[in-house]
Image 1: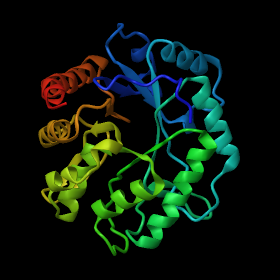
Image 2: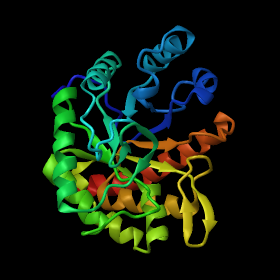
Image 3: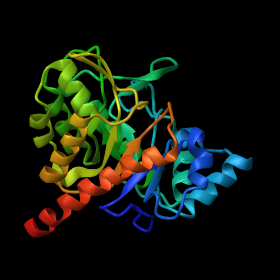
Image 4: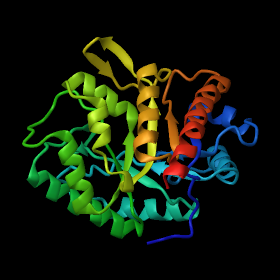
Amino acid sequence: MVSSHLSPAPVSAGLGLRRGLLDQLLAAAPGDFDFLECAPDNWIGVGGRLGEALEQLTSRAPLTCHGLSLSLGGVEPLDDTFLARTRRFLDRHQVALYSEHLSYCADDGHLYDLMPIPFTEEAVHHVAARIRQVQDALDRRIAVENVSYYAAPYQAMAEVDFVNAVLDEADCDLLLDVNNIYVNAINHGYDARGFLARMPSRRIASYHIAGHYDEADDLKIDTHGADVKEDVWTLLADAYRLHGVRPTLLERDFNFPPLAMLLTELGRIRDLQARATPRESAHG
């Protein structure tokens, strides 16, 4: 597995590299963000002005990648050509941290959504085998993200047990999405902190945090289009306390505010990290 690529520092706060933010990111001051994250699916083969902008930004800060279309839980064969192109993209931009969703998004064609996987032993074996295949193809450990879901598929085991079983059998890392834990806990009636406490610290490569929409007291929609809610900030602080500080990405996919407002949220991430880091060091 590759080891010479660029990783964000454990104490770091990053932003999603979205085309709607491109001009603001290019104009940002040094140190405004510690790293950027993009979906390689949207950037592979892109040239011209956009390609030049990507090169400029990746020369200033480490890049992480979060895939959208591997469909790890699907039944269609993995796309070897796409995996090869992804590996070249990751190598070119010195990407050490690549993640994908613990979901599926294709079934006789692309579904354009992240669909939940049934929580069964059979699914654990199926998904873990596909993750190992991806890791071999990319010559990297990858991380998988716990996803938000609304219509729960067949569940022979709890979500937390399913996630842990996949991680163990695949021997991969975890991108822990704190907002997804909160949204799922409300929508499906479980304890968010209890779920968080059962995540495996040693496998957590990074965190995501994002805003969501309050449809009702018992229904939250994971939108990535709003400010982060107070309860989610509290849960992120709990994650740092329980599992330690890791690179943390602020996800914003639409309804982009001025960059200064996003940098204020990055500042809050950094503040929580600073508060947690002395405890982590002392504990170590």
